[in-house]
Image (cartoon, rainbow, N blue to C red; front, side, top):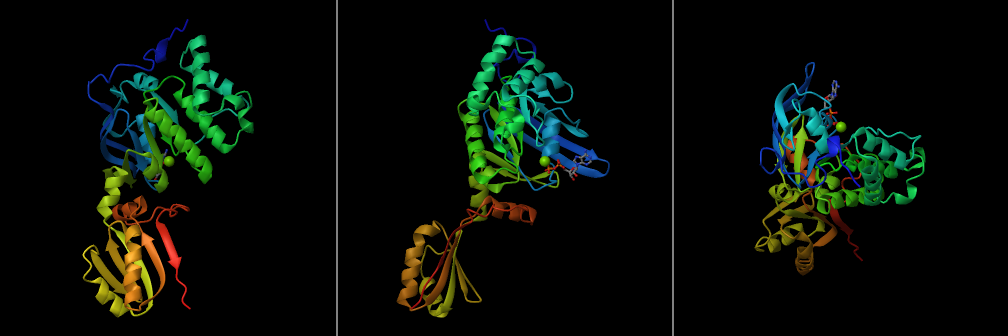
Length: 349
Ligand SMILES: Nc1ncnc2c1ncn2[C@@H]1O[C@H](COP(=O)(O)OP(=O)(O)O)[C@@H](O)[C@H]1O
Ligand SMILES: [Mg+2]
């Protein structure tokens, strides 16, 4: 017999939000001040049921403060927010029973085994013994930790600990899962595994997910929509594709050793080249679908005997979007992996 009690009585197939809308989260004028620091400044936003939504921003942008207000850990200074139809100030308990949270700073007990950690969490949520047991196996399977379940957490790798935390966040069948920097400090491969678990939970289990990150690639590859947060404000909000499209075309850049003028003359009439900029021995061409255009550009160069020493290709990334809206690059290493798709050096004999 599985009897569901107390906080988890909504189970997995709960009714839609009380207000009948399809918003999993609605935020209006949400503000948090610490003394004279305004960490979150008048944020308004709706997140749809089933969405995988990203808050992207640099360190100190206000992401964790937003998550803490939505998860009832901090009281807003101004404004309001509803999570699964419940007010984060007036209906804290209802909010808490609707959500799972993985905070930025790890909060698991290293002396307990994975299974014990999950069991403890289930008890906290008033889950009945049999349901707890069944759910522990389910969430362990979701994050591929069945075989490690009886080892102490202090023996887990960083990635495994993070997976266990995600499993714990899912124990009580939350509608909405909050992940604050879920892959912070993990290596690139582990990060990709975690992305896969996050995707599965969203696509297969239908869990609405809000995550924060300062990794451009993470926001780009995972999220249905992304809000760029800067100084406590939303400065841009859209799908990653639309945000990148706004930046414009791809750029092919050519380092030209000689014959630049002739090459410019021969490229100018080509209709698919949207603009040509020459600067200090470099020619930059704005085009769409740059990759497929490179051979033709090289043919033109051969035809007019221009000597090209290197060819670069740049497709707009979220990094470009971030730069456009904040005027800064996000301080981070390893985010440029996808931005320079090709930089080929030419040999001349
Ligand atoms: N408890 C606090 N007391 C004072 N200032 C805080 C507190 N929590 C956060 N802040 C400040 O609020 C701003 C936003 O912080 P935070 O939400 O942690 O940003 P993020 O998660 O995007 O890195 C920062 O300037 C931070 O120093
Ligand atoms: Mg943070």
